Each structure stands twice: as C-alpha cells, then as structure tokens.
Amino acid sequence: MTVLDTEPASAPSGDALVVLDHVDKHYGDLHVLQDINLEIKRGEVVVVIGPSGSGKSTLCRTINRLETIDSGTITLDGKELPAEGKGLAKLRAEVGMVFQSFNLFAHKTILQNVTLGPMKVRKLKKSEAEAEAKKLLDRVGVGAQAAKYPAQLSGGQQQRVAIARALAMRPQVMLFDEPTSALDPEMVKEVLDVMVSLAKEGMTMIVVTHEMGFARVAADRVVFMADGQIVESNTPNEFFDNPKSERAKDFLGKILKH
Amino acid sequence: MDLFSEYGSAILEAFLLTLRLAVFSGTFALLLGVVLAVFRVSPVPVLRWIGAAIVYTFRNTPLTLVMFFALFGLVYQLHIYGPPEEVTLSLSEQNFWMAVLALSVYTSTFVCEVLRSGINTVPLGQAEAARAVGLTFSQNLRLIVLPQALRSVLNPLASVIIAMIKNTTVAVTIGVVTATGVNEASGQMRTMMENEPNQIVLIFIIFSIGFMLMTLPVGFLAGWASKKFAVIR
Image 1 (cartoon, rainbow over the protein chains, first blue to last red):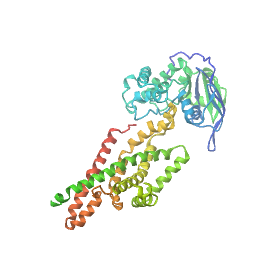
Image 2: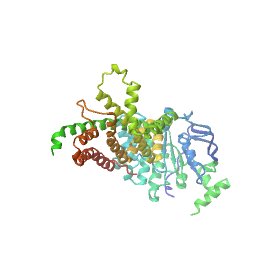
Image 3: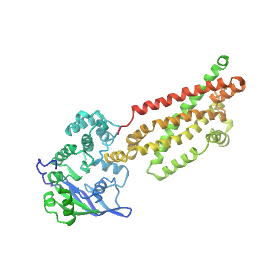
Image 4: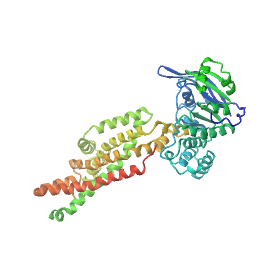
C-alpha cells in the first residue's frame, strides 16, 4: 500500500451534506442499485469499495446525475437534484468529479482545462480564473506544465490536473470514481497524496477505489457494496480488521492475501 | 492562343462568378450544417426529427432537382420574392441567390453528416467531464464537443466543399449569369465549345485547370490544418 505514513483523518462533525434515500436503479434486467440509503456528512471522507459490478461506480455517478435513478431521492445540502437543464448544471458545479480516465479536455491546455469552468460557469474574469488556476496547479504539483496539452503529461500528472480542475469550481463535495485504477503503479502515490491532503483539509469526499491503504489513512468510513447493495458500513479499522458479513470477509480475503 | 485574346476576360468573369457562388454557398452550407448537426444530436426529439427530415430529403434528392425547385418552385410558383410585378431584383441576382440557396441547403446535409460522425469520434468522457464541471448542453457542444469533432473531420469536410465547388456547375441549369450576361464557368465553357468546336481539348484543359485552382487549395489547406490542429489523445 502506498500512503501509510500519514496520520488518520480527523472525525467529521458537520451536518448531512449528501443524502441518498431509497435509491433504486436498473440497467434493463440488472438491478444495479438496490434500495441504497447513505448519508454523507459535511467534511466526511467515505470510501466505497466492493467487487467489480457491485454498483459502486454507478452510485458515485448518480450523485451528480451522470446516471439517472429510477426511484428514491438524492439531496445535496438539503436540496433535491434537479432533473435537467440549468438547475442541474448549477448543481454539478457544486460537485467535483474525478474520473478513472482523467477526461481532461484534449484540445485545451492544462491551464485552460482548469479555467474553463470558473470562467464559463462561475463567470470569473480570465485574470482571476488564471490566478486561481495557477495556485491550484502549483498545489497539486503541476504548475510547470500549465502551457502543455493533456496528452503531453503522464497519467499521474493528468489526474492531478483533473483534481485541480474540479477544485477550481469550489465544490461542496468531491467524487472520485476509481481515480488511480488507470494509472501506472509508480504514479498512484502522487495522486493519493493529493487526495489525502484534501481529506485532511476537511473536504467532503466520496471515493470509489481499490486502494485499501488510502481507505485506512484518509477515510472516516468504509462502505462495502456487493450486488447493488450496501452490505457493510464501518470505520476503516473496524471494517478491515473485523468484517461482519461473509461477503466482505470473502472480498477482503481475496484482495489482501498478496 | 487566340482563344485567350478572344475569351480571356469572359473566362475570368465566369470563374469569378463561380467563385462568388462557391464562397457564399460554402459559408452558408457550413453554418447550416453545424445547425443541422446540433439538431440531430440535441436532447429535444422535435429538433432531432426536423434535422433528420431535412437531411434525408435534401441528401437524397439530385441537386438539379433542388436547383429547379428553388427557381421554378420558390420564385415562379410560390413567389418568395413577392408578386412578379413588384420584384425589383434583377434576373441575374435572383437566379444567383436561388443557386446559392439550393447549393447551401443541399451541401449542408453532407456537412451535417460529416460533423455528426466527427461528434461520434469524441470520447464520451469529454462530454461527461464538461457536464461534471457544470457546463450546460449548449456550452458543452460549443466549447468541448464541436471543436474536437470539427478538428477530426477537416479532411472529409474539405471533400464536401470540393464537391460543392464542382457542383456549382449545376447552376447552369437555371442560368446563373453576371450582370453583363456572362455565364458561370460551365455555362461559359459550353458557349466556347459551341463557338470553337475544333478547340475542344484546349477548352477542357483551360476549365479543368480553372476548377483545380479553386479546389486544390481547399484540400491542401485542410490537410495542413488537420495536422496543425490535431487533437492528440
């Protein structure tokens, strides 16, 4: 594991920021999310783990409505997600998203990737947006690459830019959908380090990942999903050392043996 | 070379008319093509249907028919310029703009389909990331998807424009002439072939060179631009 040399995150103390209430979703016959109830407090870092096909990525994507849901409700800061249109775009601006495949805008420079949202959505002036973007890029350690295009950067650098791009919107919550799964092993740490520092600063985070080290270090809570259901939800230490369900024991047995 | 001394200025005038036809039609075709492509990928079903109906109709109708319809249908029967006795537009201007209309609409359907295939080359993640940042549908299309789509289809787009430049010759069917009565290039070529039947090979060479002077730069420009603006993934 990669980042075991840092302190555990402090416990969250805020009110409920993201609330999923009886959420169901089907892909044709597949019941991919089954009666999901989940509450994420302001400042809380929740790591979602589970076998592939368990619905954890789908869960993550429903929170900014990149995936629609069939029934139930999802609220952000007490307000239900709008179905579409300008309201939805506005909500998405409040929710930062980091994808497995980075998805940096391929025809824009690194700096433009980070300033686009602030200029077009938050309506900042170019100079303000650029000043903010440069600070964020420095913070994630890619300030020197600002004039380059995404394809000229390594995967780890691209993912850190993607984090900066999301942060530039000053989101209330950050979603991470397997942010290190497409990275070469030697680049995983540089991305996780950024995420750990974010967690320590009190950012509310929902992280779908296979990085158990990150979960132990940065998470306030681990949510274990299997077959579209939340099977277990506990503190990282409790979950990894004393998993309650057979499904979780079986999963941890398979991934921690090596 | 007395062909040039006799017809030189007429040939030049004819090609300038053809060029004018091509520039107006090309500009409108590109603009309308973008609009049609946006319609065809829009989340609003009615817009998608309208886009599809226009594309299916004009892409599958011969240009000659479209051109005839523009002049004889729209002008002579439906009086889009108003009642014939009140039209102040000269005959040459009227026919010219009808040719532009026919060429633009006809070509825009091909532009639309090329753009649409370009949109399909843009990875879904690009649009998802744009949505996640909070861009609206139109911002997403304008700032992220279309610029990338356009860059990936510059070469096929050039083929459409080259075909359009050559299609300006169809305008001879509705008689597009300058104010001084000179036909566009293909009309002028026909006139010269009738007047100089023993110079036909030379006439062919002159006119094909004239067209290549217009079409070759389009292809070269597109090739250069698609390299310069290529989106590296």
